Image (tube, rainbow, N blue to C red; front, side, top):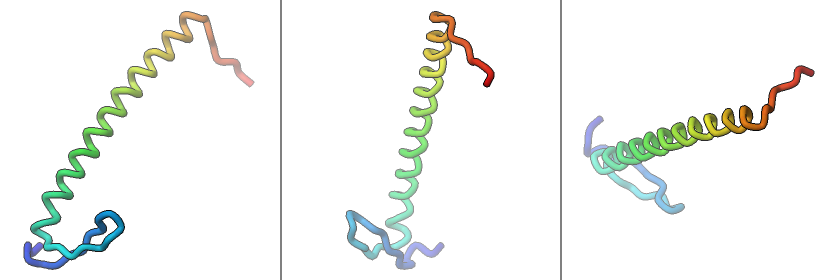
Length: 66
């Protein structure tokens, strides 16, 4: 896209006019931050999953068929 092209971004409830060249770096940074958060959540989930399995084994908890 042309870097001089106008675009609009919602910042704190206010619609602000920017150019594409100003917005794209911020969007890339936001995307990278979201990716890092997802990785952290995935790691936390795996740790909790292991903790849960150990808890089941420690207290001999098994699933019952209904």
